[in-house]
Amino acid sequence: MSETLRKDVVLKVGGISKRFGGLQALSDVGITIERGQVYGLIGPNGAGKTTFFNVITGLYTPDAGSFELAGKPYQPTAVHEVAKAGIARTFQNIRLFAEMTALENVMVGRHIRTGSGLLGAVFRTPRFKKEELEIAQRAQELLDYVGIGKFADYKSRTLSYGDQRRLEIARALATDPQLIALDEPAAGMNATEKVMLRELIDRIRNDNRTILIIEHDVKLIMGLCDRVTVLDYGKQIAEGTPADVQKNEKVIEAYLGTGGH
Ligand SMILES: Nc1ncnc2c1ncn2[C@@H]1O[C@H](COP(=O)(O)OP(=O)(O)OP(=O)(O)O)[C@@H](O)[C@H]1O
Image (cartoon, rainbow, N blue to C red):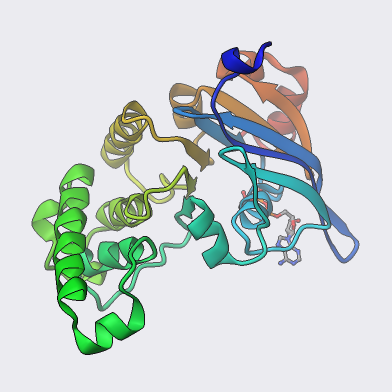
């Protein structure tokens, strides 16, 4: 394919391996995600999904691997560097600032993209005040966007579980990321919340954002994703469209072998 026809690739990682003592948690895993895609990562318990997420977002140092974000190499050596490079993530166990308001939680996400710095904050310079106002306005827009605008002044710990997950997504969006990585966003949600989550992820995708998602709910993944990778015991056993992956013998075996969850 010629250079001009090549798709806009957001994340390209290859050859990722990670060992914990005697356990090979990831062996030579690679994925390529194009702009505007929702890309799913599935696999039975212990398959290596979280490890993969932790490697690409700088929480774990891989033993091997190459990493490219929006055409530029990046080194996932520290979480804040990865956030600056343009990957925002949410966590399986929600990690919000419990005593801060919903608005403040989103404002924190936005701060990595602003310029007036610590001195500006200490002296409350005009530039700092103007920037704070803009950040607050943008944070409110994002809360509205994910559907929890009316809770802006509530402490995050008082929000329902589903709303806290939405708040995490708003905070991730606040960093203006190239890629949003969602770690089991539907965990603990009821059926109605899952439908709403699906609508939200569709909406984010339609706004030309790119999403990587780990999820246990295979039905949700299959209905939502453009492409899917299946891990099993740290190996990539299938990659392709949901329809292709669902027919794959190795995938069927991996899921049936562990109780088909
Ligand atoms: N920090 C660690 N130290 C040692 N072993 C680890 C560590 N993190 C993960 N593992 C092991 O690596 C393997 C892969 O775990 P991982 O959490 O990545 O799987 P997963 O696919 O996310 O599973 P689940 O669906 O249960 O969350 C497991 O055997 C796990 O016990």
